[in-house]
Amino acid sequence: MTRAWILPMLFVFSGSALATGLIFKGSPGTAAGLLLAFLALAGVNSPLVFPKSIGAREAQRRSAVDGRPVVFWRPGCKYCIRLRIRLGSSARQLHWVDIWRDPAGAAAVRAANDGNETVPTVVVAGRPHTNPGPGWVREQLAPHT
Image (cartoon, rainbow, N blue to C red; front, side, top):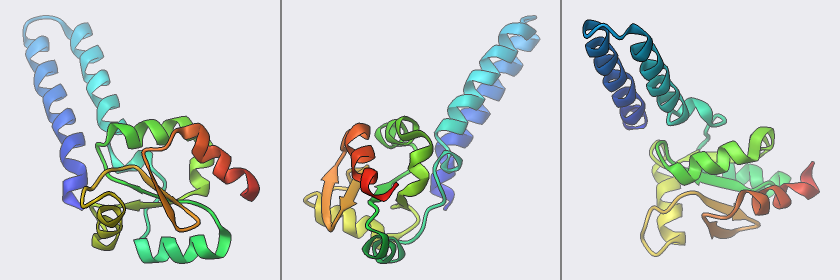
């Protein structure tokens, strides 16, 4: 769980340090803007941007019942962030598994990607799709909306 927060916290601490330096140099406006930018980066890279993650086994069980795709992701992954943001509110309909929190999820991703933890990996009807486009993922939700 702590590993998921390393990158966002680095953004917060780095932004704070740079802003503090700018304030002492007499540039409070620039410092405030820079700090806001770093806080935005921290927010986008945090697990808070994603719907609540569940375990891989639970996600697969739910997917078998409702037919909705399972998305395996990890914090800090720019492709996962792109998928999440481009899906918008429809992202809440998917079953999200954080592979850094769930060893079974990480194992499922490695099994689907020749031993690599390549994310996002989206599983639809038991078939994995590595880094699919947001439009394609949205189409997989169409029968379930």
